[in-house]
Length: 398
Image (cartoon, rainbow, N blue to C red; front, side, top):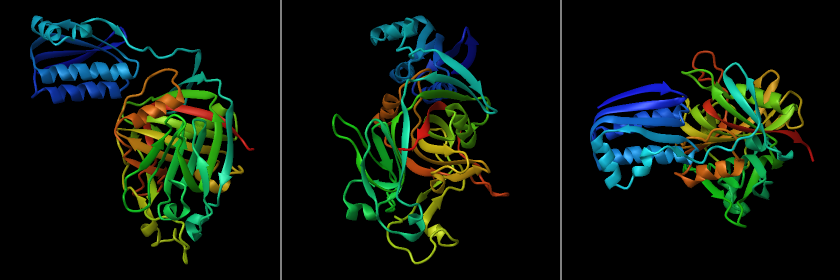
């Protein structure tokens, strides 16, 4: 099997020559997936030199069409050998030979913006803004104690911090871990050794409920959407750069940010134990910290999709005790949940259905408090992202 790729009139043309059978289908699938990951959402297949196609080969071609349809892409078999054309007709897949305009992304007026590592397309969504409150005391991480609050996480709420799903105080006491909620979905990493995130999503009138031990809780809607794409072919956009851009675009000193991204890798930590039980010594001092926090020694969840919820601020904000420094004048608190890779539609998209789509597929792989590792010799830097969508709002204080 010979596979070649060329660009033509804004489309990617992939030409296959030879036998498209069970032996070659995985390689072809890998090429298709890599193209979509690079942001190629208009793909044409030239199958004029394919001499044989099996059911495995037909499945690979059909999978590409379904994946592009799911993200508003456009696809067509622009040429086919007589054998391929006959196989498509017998399989009832003749529609793959015709130009298919598939759920084109919603269009709206936009403007562009550039930073050092990314290009952006900015849309106004008409959102009203986010009102943010602090819950509990982050010193609980060191000292213990349970003054957690029961909260409901509906479509227009966001939250991040240390928490658990469920309302029973006794049951949650040993489970509190990295927590985030947005757009009617809530996820947390139970600190009970299971290492498997639990989640709940809104269904009808049933909304997720949980206890937040400490963290930030917001209500409202986002007025800005920023679609970003890395300007580099070999690396992603750093989290700190996205945070700085979000603050600049918000025009405020404190901004709430939600992101759905195609991810190059995450840098962060998660709790090994619930911090609610009382402590007699400093849990975050060395060597105790090794018993309480699990760190990655390299970027984790490479080539995944991620959901981020966070708050960014300049120095001296009201929420300073909940934030960590990115630089001398930039602070933030961000949590991320990693999912198996799913391509993201381009253009103007809505927050709720985009988040819901993540939870429609395979379950989340892990939840992290994102960190920046600046150690001189073996530091692994910070999380990086290839492309994605940022929903941004200035923060008001109720």
